[in-house]
Length: 178
Image 1 (cartoon, rainbow, N blue to C red):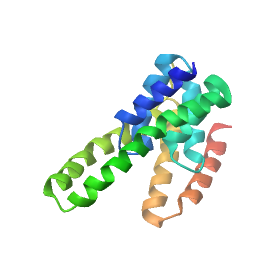
Image 2: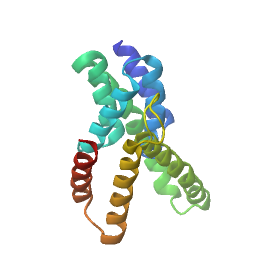
Image 3: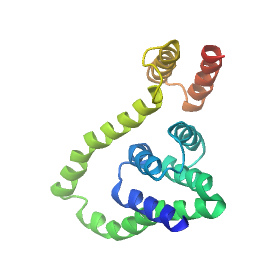
């Protein structure tokens, strides 16, 4: 089990890029395929990982590893997740510092932006939409859309601090779903 946790998260860490939220679709696919947690539990763990300090993908790996195999599972999953990034950053830093003015490097990163945006949008939709088996349009989903809209509006219009938006969203959640 520990080796499988390490290998799966090593693969995720190696073949994903664009930040933690862009990695969530791949993490979800792999974790559900392995049967380590249910889809509902995955959403709960990822939400908790997003609220904790640090990168959401690494936090997710730690929580999922712990859920699957305890403290050693958390260590195996976290090590697998961070090892590719650590190695790649060390190796690429020399190349990027030498080639930072290169048009090829600039264009490559510019071309990756829409893919990363799409992956983050997919992850956001996964959290917003109802779980499998739940009806699509309910008061519950309407409440989620209202909270999302209010959160987005307050951040863009009033430049509220993200922690204030989280607190406001929590209060709206209590109001809508109690």
